[in-house]
Length: 287
Image 1 (cartoon, rainbow, N blue to C red):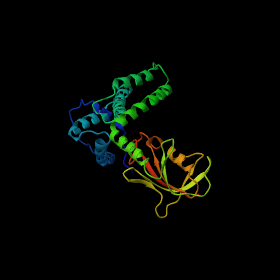
Image 2 (cartoon, rainbow, N blue to C red; image 1 turned 90 degrees about the horizontal axis):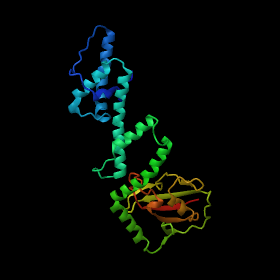
Image 3 (cartoon, rainbow, N blue to C red; image 1 turned 90 degrees about the vertical axis):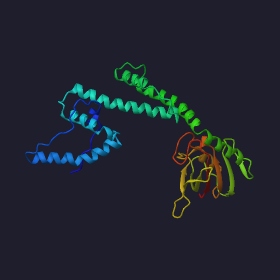
Image 4 (tube, rainbow, N blue to C red; image 1 turned 45 degrees about the vertical axis):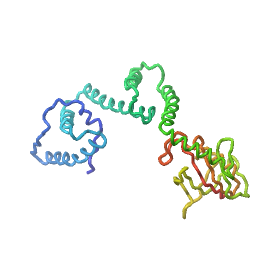
């Protein structure tokens, strides 16, 4: 029998701790009593991990958790009380939502916090049918307002890195053999191809290696046994800088291409690729 998974709502009673006793003695009269007790013991280790990792209950307050659990498990079914308890659970999620929004709007400035009250007011207005706009319209407004705020916050956080990437492009543009396109893309021809130029609907097969300005390789398909990478220029699933460069490369070309952040991933954090990163690609068009 698989272990049962405890749902978060089963422990919403952590907020209410009226019971003082944390000891419940088993009353084992028959095999079903023992069966039930064994299940409880079997669940205890998983619950301990769940408390720590997902519910984030401080182990110093284990007794308080147990009090709430006893109350929730032994209380009579009451739809009104049940609704209240589940509201407590959702309220914690609303608080987490506000904290997440704060980190997006204010980046690394932990001294600033979006007001939970305004988030609650919007949710409650929607639940009661008193909102001034539809949820879809509100979400559209939220997205359009969030993006510039998020970008500004990241620009403050990554100001030094952004400046270093811009300096790299400025210095690189002065090097011999480097061509600068109006869009800001730079390239240096390693091998001049003699094949055809791709059209807007061509599928281009290529080998590539992608690096950051410090030389860190973040992606490559040039290793042994790797297959050529295919880009359908009619429906490209690559960054805009790649599309622009590939359209200029005759088959057989091998270029080093320098793509500014606004034609790469911009303010997005892509793991190894931090916001506002200039990307350097060696691209060889095979076909």
